[in-house]
Length: 188
Length: 178
Image (cartoon, rainbow over all chains, first blue to last red; front, side):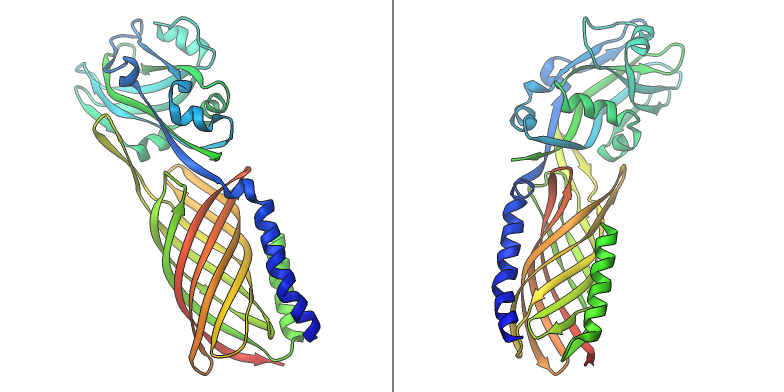
């Protein structure tokens, strides 16, 4: 028994150390916040004045250093959010959605074209008449409906287009200081 | 994963019944949980329960349950601060400790379990591995006080969420097993 315990005392820590070394890749991983600020790429404010006068955001995450740094070792995208302030520029309530066109070409300008080519990512966010709504991180995370589609793009080439559209027949709104937040789970 | 933990618990219970000079205790602990390389989670508080089962002089297994309230994290964009709420964590599992006798103990331990993280738009469960060192002393018979530092590693899809946990607690030996 004493012999067993003596060996056990050596073997157990050695086994634990071996397990730690085997898990090395897992050990040196982390969660990194990447932000794509629309203002940095000329999209602030983002003005959407009607269903036939949309303004798209050409997102290229490769322009973001934190994304490029971790892209090759990216394991998962564990959180996504669209934040900013949205102002309704009309006297009628509407709701705002964000759509993604995963295979971008020339920017689209009509809601019909966006719905045909894209996938709904986010929303609807209710926007009362004349109101400004600040979208918080938590609220935004709740409103994501196309999480997998966006994650696939982030894990892919990181290049896609975003469009904000309304859900009523006519609308006009403005997005200030908009940004996409993604939390990447990656190895260092 | 749950099967592995259930099997380990069953094994612990079985071997406890056949071990010599063992004991079964119950303890509580509290402390801080510090996220390691996690930019979306802040430091939080941690508390839980343990049931140390001393099987043989050098080996103690310990089922545990723990709960953490992790801190918020802020990101500033365009001069505006956005806050992501910290997740609530619940964890359970089994640690195995290399314990020595005497009134003062310094012991390494390792364990496996399950961790669940919940916050708005997040509800995820992970297999968890624990590695740590503990210092225990017994001011009076049957009662022991423990201070521990551990690395908790919640593994998910080839990466992990890691926490450095520092806890203090006390355990009471409820009864001995022959």
